[in-house]
Length: 68
Image (cartoon, rainbow, N blue to C red; front, side, top):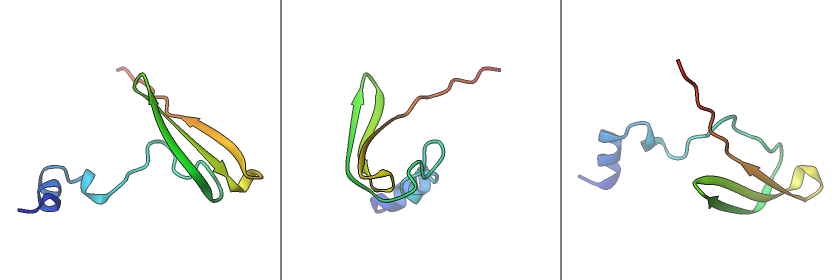
């Protein structure tokens, strides 16, 4: 069994490659010089946003906890 077959069998959701976290496409144009940083378990991504005058942009993932 190959690694890909193993992943497909036991982790079918993960076998399709990268999945968006939150709303996909938070930048409307090209992104370049992408950098990922994790601080205390919180991921940050910085990039040059070509759609907004090639300005540097930093995004952070904030997990929302939902209780019943």
